[in-house]
Each structure stands twice: as structure tokens, then as C-alpha cells.
Image 1 (cartoon, one colour):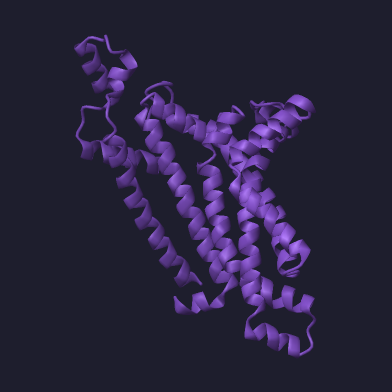
Image 2 (tube, rainbow, N blue to C red):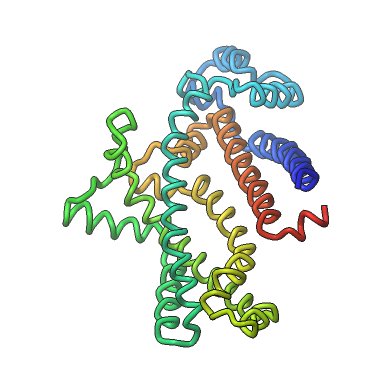
Length: 315
């Protein structure tokens, strides 16, 4: 297991190095000068040049890249051009909204998808199976922001159970903060739960058709016992892949939902920073999100090895 983990860790480091190069290069080729944008189009050239020196924009690309990477490794992400405050503090404040939202949405996704997928797989071809698959097909087809708008109309405007948007802050109490994240989490979870339920059903049906399941049934196990003792664990491998990808999406791809509910999370921060040409914030946030995605994939790989011992034997 240790050898397998070290191999995956080596792959993680290489991926991070490549990702940092790609992100830095992509941000640098974006047209426009941050100093000119901050001072306005009528600013004097000497004022623009002085600001470029202050921001370190006149340094060579190589020096700026290594300065940025060394800052990331030490936790010093630099200073925001727009907010004039440390980027690490800005990201920290926004992360405490986006991360709980992603975990909340993923928890709802698993709680909905696992029972639905197992229920449909064990009743293959029945009306229940058809109903579950029809509902999940609808969930896949409808965009999550449309779910969000409908929930705002129903639960915020008509029923007045939840606020239409905003975030009170964790300092005002756990339950008010969780309540503010509930509608966004549901809007994110429903489409993802539909996808995961369909994957769970397909994987479980494939596993239930394997020879070792028929052998276990022939030895006297009931269908329920064969399902929970043998089939479910082996069916989890493709499901774990989807869960890992979904968490990465929920953390990095909630820009629209955060804007619908006016949540000051990482997605909205990236959107605002791009429009304001705050490159240091964009680079740092995107790199942090890439690191989260790669780390989640690394964790999923370790979960593979735990679920399937054959992977440890190949390492």
C-alpha cells in the first residue's frame, strides 16, 4: 500500500508543476495591462510605469513565475492589485464559504444517489426502476441554476422559509450559516445526484451479473446478502471516480450558483478578479482549485487501493 501511495504522490507533484506552468502562461497571455486598468485609460504613462514597478509587473516572466511559486509554497500568495490586501486572507475568507458548500452538496448527493441507484438496480425493469431513471434523466437535463431560481421563487419568495441570498457569516452562528447554504447546496446536489445514481445503478447491475455473484448465490446466500457482502463493494470503484470528480466540480465550478445566491465564495472571487484584471488573485485561486482537484483524485486513488486489493499488488 505504501509503495502504491508513493507512486501516486509522485504523480501528484508532477501534475502540480505542470499545472502551475500552464496557469501562469495562460494568465500572462491575457490581453490588457493591470496597472493601466487600475489607474484608468487617462492615467499618465509615468504613473502607470510607477505602478507596474510597485506591482512587480516589470520583472521577467521567469522571475515572476518562481517568485509566485515560492510564495505559494510558503503561504505568501502576494497582494491583491484591487483589494490591496494579502491574497491568502482573501482566499481564506472565501474558502470558508465554498468548501462547506461543496461538502454539504456532496453529502446530499451521496445521500440521494446511493439509495436511489441501489433501489433501481435491485428492481431492474420494474416500474420503480423506470421511475427512478426518468427522474434522474430529468435531473441530468435541467441546469442547476434553473433549479436554484425555482427554489428561490418557492422557498424564499412564496414560503419565506429561506433567505433569497447572502451569507450571514459563521461568526453569527452555525445554523444560520448552514441555512443560508441549504438552497445553494440542494441546487448543486440534485443534478450531481442524478448522475451518480445512474452510475451506481449501472455499476451495480454489471457486478450482479458476474460469475462470483452467481457462485455466492449457489452456495446459499440470499440476493440481499450477496448484494451487501460482495456486489456493492466491487461496484464502488467507478462510483468513487465520479464522486471525486463531482467534489472537484462542486468546489471549483459553483460560480453561477454563488452568483445566483450572492455567496461571496471562491467562484465569485475568480469571476470578479478576472473582470478587474487582478491577475495575482486569479492565478492563486485557480492554482488552489487545481491543487484541490489533484488532491481529491489522489485520495480517490488511495480509496481504489482500499476497495480493490489487486491495485496494491500491481504497485
